[in-house]
Structures are given as C-alpha cells and as structure tokens.
Image 1 (cartoon, rainbow, N blue to C red):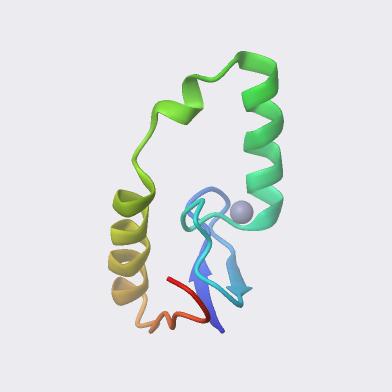
Image 2 (cartoon, helix red, strand yellow):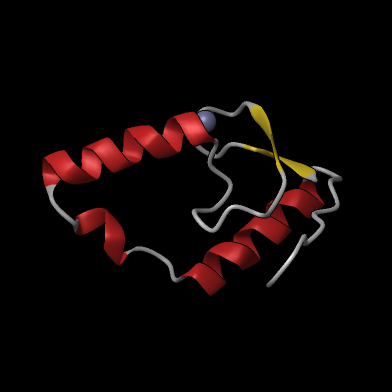
Length: 73
Ligand SMILES: [Zn+2]
C-alpha cells in the first residue's frame, strides 16, 4: 500500500501496487485513456514504464511518501 499525489488533478490517491501508468489516479487515467482513443495514439509515445517509475519514486520522495512494492516487480 502507498499513496501518491496525482500529477493530473493534484489529489492524493492510494494504491496497492505502484501504478505502471505513473502518479496518476484512476479517474485521470480513465480520462487519458478516453483522450487516447479520441485523439489517436500520440499519448503512448511518452516516457517508458521505467522512466515513469523513476518519476513516481522521485515524486513520492518529494512528498515524503515511501512507495512499497507489493508482489512481482
Ligand atoms: Zn487525478
């Protein structure tokens, strides 16, 4: 379990496993998926999962949160 501040809406959300999509809450994730379908696949050329993970950890550190991995990594 852990929590992150969503980079999209700025709200804190909780997760069981560090989300692969990045520090984005489910609500914003769904919205971005919908946008992806609407505007094509440009959004998918963003950072790799590994880079996102680095961002998550950096984010969490800034916010004084300690992300914990659960299950397979
Ligand atoms: Zn959000």
